[in-house]
Image 1 (cartoon, rainbow, N blue to C red):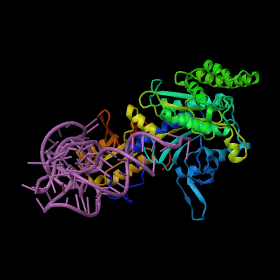
Image 2: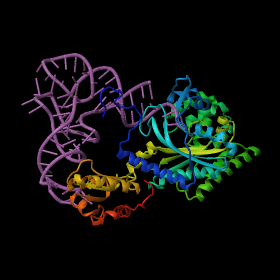
Image 3: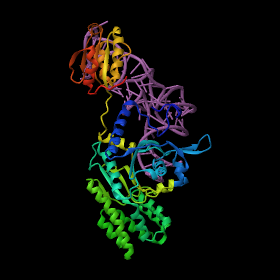
Image 4: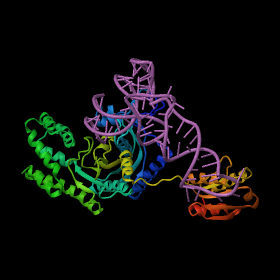
Length: 453
RNA sequence: GUGGUAGUAGCUCAGUAGGUUAGAGCACUGGAUUGUGGUUCCAGGGGUCGCCGGUUCAAAUCCGGUCUACCACCCCA
């Protein structure tokens, strides 16, 4: 609830809080992402939350600082909360590039920060799942990254009807713009227009294009619009060749297409063709991509991006001085959780405890605590009440805690040394002697007794 | 940074010709239930109606500001 005036009682905008009920679900979601990474042989790494500001400004220019959480530390050094993992990864990988056995598959799942206005699907602090394959230039690596991201999403029950991977390629764009004689320094501006093509009014776009390209704007815009409609390799081939009659240029086109086809082939062989479509409307920002780029969208409904990535073969060399090919992708938890909730695909995550000790007589407290110690030492989770209560209330409490088993501990049990243990799922109750209790509870919980205190 | 909409109990929300003591469901606590859970029934606690100011005999209600949230733009690594 918002209280008074945006003070310290409120928390910062864009920073979420998770009560246990919600956090359980988040943990369950993250567990599936970890699991997908494991199936694809990715190893987890992590890095600092705080980095030198230059790590980000050098790569993307000074303007980026406006979208970072950054400040001067007490030693006068400009630092920033990480807005993404890739620069950190580039440094880590670059530093050990010569001693790494390539290819490397690394992933991370951690929180990142951007100083932007929060809105649908975007917070200032968010958890992102990052996957990267380093030291491998062939398109099979790109396919693996896409496949693993899809595997993560599919593990929640999302399928072909829900997800679409739209694959583009920065080299194709660069090639087309070259053949259209667009000066290299204008590429970024034009790609920005492409990125906005669905949102920006046509006359506005024409105006911007004219400002950027002068007289050639209509011709270039027409060709660009054509490229955006291409959905297959054959169409792409004839489109590229329609831009030039030069023999050498056409050979270069063919080489590009061969690489592109190899990616499509790998995706097909991995059984993912139904998810993937060619779509040169995808440009992926303007930063450091050098090859195929992709975004994964929610196929039905709002069509917002859930994940994205691409190849960035130059970045590690630029950051670290040790060139290393790289392809990666990332998936954020904000859009993912929204989508899973909308679809009813959130993993079930009920509170649970292996065993509840129903302490109905103060005289049994000593026995209960001793038992709790033994059961916990055996690796089971145990709860018991701090104050004695009637069995009715204790069973209610046990139920609320998600107890799988309840041990009745009253006057009678302490005297007799025999304890009724109730299986809360079936309602069945069995009398168990004190000596057998720990083993019995272990069997009931489905956990093998662990060693150690 | 720009624009639109909204803010009433922990949650979802009722509540305007301005008029005693601001309501419901869910959740929470207690009881029915002094040896056995989920259901049911009864009772209870919980509110400066986001905040500050203004208009008025009187403001949850009207006006201004402010904070926050949501939505869109910018941006999207």
